[in-house]
Picture 1: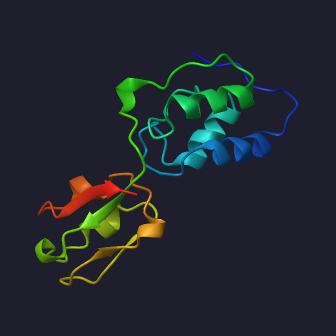
Picture 2: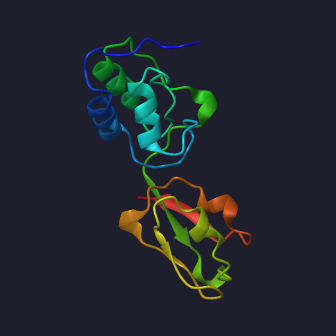
Length: 145
């Protein structure tokens, strides 16, 4: 089912930029897109609805609706749950240095070398949780940001 193109006459790139600024920048993919920018671009083209972002929650969906001048609705709970801001923490004593978490991190917030302990750069971590299932020894936990 195609959505109507929001705000006809407004350049899509400008609209996508404004939508992207409203998104939480977790880059988690729960919306079904490879990150926040691709989701914003799809909304700007009228190809995606405003309710796909669990990290943004209901408040985020309302903000997107206001910008697009469409009716507000809650975020789609089947995509995940809304959580307070969080960051990953690597339990250093358990890390085996496999680098799988580094490969899974969409924002390069994890550093370390092969067969050496890794760590998370807190200000860069978006709390997307993509590193957690990638870790074969379950040494990554999420803590409040």
